[in-house]
Length: 137
Image: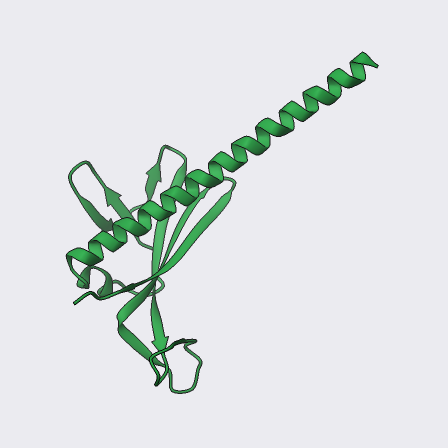
């Protein structure tokens, strides 16, 4: 009986540790995705063309150093584990100015807004944050 209880406790502790590690990894990915969005937002604040000039639906990577932040074409590896990238997509509006699907009749591209999707992944999967950036006056 004591052996069975010991095995049960061992299995429970092992499963707890695995779940804890999974939660920590997912939390790290979410924080890194949020950080990536904030960097893109900062680049937008510097100059809207930093965002509006990017090709749509093309993966981009952030180049982060101690003195500069920029958008680059090479993969960014964080903590030797996580890959971060982002996509820029168009925002469509109807005649009332509401955001609608691109397939909606009368939908037009809002040239002063873009949807940003930031992806952070590792060998266990990917976390994504999506947000809308607009051109500030």
